Length: 172
Image (cartoon, rainbow, N blue to C red; front, side, top):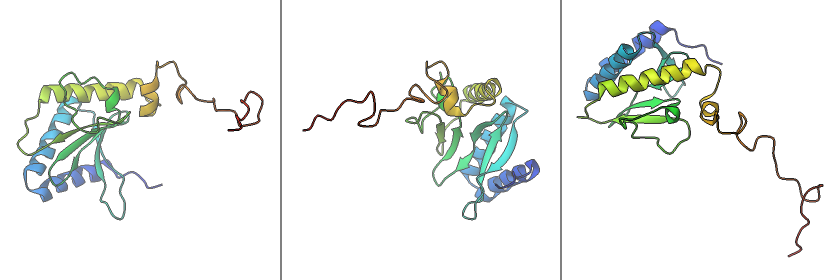
């Protein structure tokens, strides 16, 4: 297991990434970063998923991952680790909507950010992390669903053919 990158190094990495981009994506990542820290001054910058083929992903955490700040050719993407469990009355989430856990915001060139709504979303993500510190995002989603931590079918499997309680083969 790789050691986490020191906070100073993660912050320096994000600074360098913003500088290297040198276009609207760098400016947008810098703006998003400022909004994140304004929403929660206790946010910690980290660098995760560093591989030989990837320099890593900027991550903003408080009591767990709040969101990532990734840049691609045509988008700056903020992925919220537990986004599916967050209220989004302003409809900021516009990507990764089909999943059960994460949600993302894709920001394109020229897009305007609803700063108040984004701050609310960040604060809600932090509150969720702090209120459920030892749960995985998917376990948080299932809370109150009537199932166990592993879902409603945990521990229940279909009996094997020929086992007591199984139906006999129809012979067709």
